[in-house]
Amino acid sequence: MKISIPPSLAPLVTENQSIWPLTSIRVGGVSHWLAKPATISDLSVIIAWTQRQSLPYVVLGGGTNVVFSDQGYDGVVIYTRELTGHHIHEDQVVASAGESLAGLAMKFNRLGLSGMEWACGIPGTVGGALVMNAGTHDGDMASVVEGARVMTPSGVQHWPVERLEFGYRTSGLRTGRKEAIALEVDFRLHHDDPARCIERERSILEARQKTQPQGASCGCIFKNPENGPPAGMLLDQAGCKGLRVGAATVSSVHANFVINEGQDNASDVLALIQQMKDRVIEARSISLNPEVVIVE
Ligand SMILES: Cc1cc2nc3c(=O)[nH]c(=O)nc-3n(C[C@H](O)[C@H](O)[C@H](O)COP(=O)(O)OP(=O)(O)OC[C@H]3O[C@@H](n4cnc5c(N)ncnc54)[C@H](O)[C@@H]3O)c2cc1C
Image (cartoon, rainbow, N blue to C red; front, side):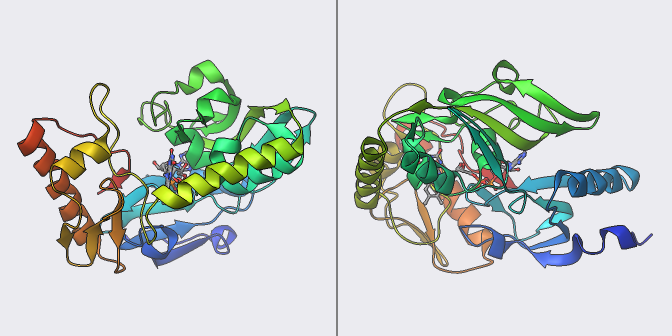
């Protein structure tokens, strides 16, 4: 039976939309439906519709850490980038899930609110960063987040930080143990001289500029193993730099980055990721776990 989009949802939901333009690595086939809520109430209406029609859904923030397959998604991709806005009260900030993480961090620096300088070079949204516990050696979401407002099947709830279960590049929201969509994130920062915050931002961005490859990517493909050398070193030693499948290639600058020179070619990217994993198993008997979220 064909599922039609109710008139009340017509401005928010479209059919048969390409996913690849919404991702930084530029892959992913067609989504049966694409929903773009601009408010929490839009999102509630969309979720109610998916429940009535028993449709699966997946949330997409900035699309900077996901790889969808060429099959796309036979359900509803809920794109949260338009859920924007933030409030600052002294050293506390509440930011909507669709806000740009780096944009917000840079704003805080100029206001003399310190704690998120590490985030200045990380693409994507606040919601995606929460789910992934995004971070660098200098800090991560777990170090500045106090809680979050989430939409669950039983309604909107406020979860304190303990309930978010942050881990290394993960949280309870990522693992799928908790069916929840991040709506707003509470940050606790501290006051500092804006000039000092901006200086830290400048040096972080400069260092990233020197070490991070250019081109369409989704950042690091694999997590660092708990013990032992970082994934980039293992991949480099296994001879991955320069490996290529079709238009996807392993960066010659950083062996944990896949650079995609094409578009809508997920099979290239996924086959290359598998080759990288296999090489490290062969060379070192270590099975790397993906940092990126693969939606197949
Ligand atoms: C060039 C480059 C450099 C990068 N450098 C870093 C780095 O230094 N450190 C780092 O940690 N990461 C890095 N990344 C990875 C990525 O930027 C981060 O993980 C980012 O926080 C992901 O945010 P996003 O909005 O793009 O999430 P997406 O990629 O859209 O989604 C990631 C996951 O979160 C889920 N999700 C997104 N929003 C929500 C929401 N509102 N509610 C529930 N689930 C949601 C998605 O379903 C998916 O499972 C880099 C990526 C690139 C391309």
